[in-house]
Length: 357
Image (cartoon, rainbow, N blue to C red):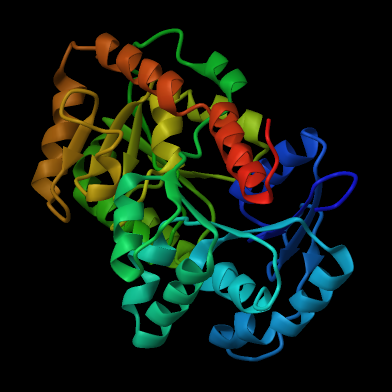
């Protein structure tokens, strides 16, 4: 172990706010953190070279560069995020090195990617098999990881929302007219945003609801064109903002809506619960650790009428769901505060290095 500051090497997507948040918290606690990333985000990081035209070779071919950085930086511990990418790369780079590897699972790296091919599943297994400790943000995700490799050291740590952001919890539960619905998932295949505007087209055209989506994602252009054909007045888009402004904006809506095909414990759902929005999600396994029968709504996947019934019930009802919203806030306070969860994360890092609090 280093004699001065504890050195932590992070391998992760530098564009992701999860990466930014964890690095910021580690640096606040006086750790010496170096972040490596293939992606070119705004946060401070070393940009790893992409040494192939083929994306599936990026991580394998980055191993020599990462090994060199490890030799120069001499970290006490490596924390890789996303099993089939950085976890796999870190496992290869750390072979024959006595440095513990903490692996954070994010969701699709276990729930989707390993199902693409034998090679993808093999990459996930290599990462899981070589990790000193595995962290997942839901028990569901951890259980799925166990099916790939039987883990010895693992636990669930949620991402959560910062305590100070609870100040944005809605002061007034009265619904807007038209009802304001936010869908904060980017336009990617896994989030199936087109289904939402197709299912709710009549309510958009009648002006009973407004739906706000993010203005990014691989499918954004085609989605926007389809949205304009349904409603130019009641479908809108927001741009990326800093976290505080975003959560304040998020809190100005009435409903949170997600149609994700797979999810672990979505941070956006935790944020919605914390801020006082009514959560409405597709009925998938990954949301059930947060969303039961009495604190939100779940609709059958790909079922227009099921989603429509929920939306029209909320529009027509005089119920402001006060108790539901207050219950959700308490759930978040109990297990979804980011500061508490990062503290648990740090404790595991220290335990793996051999430091007692």
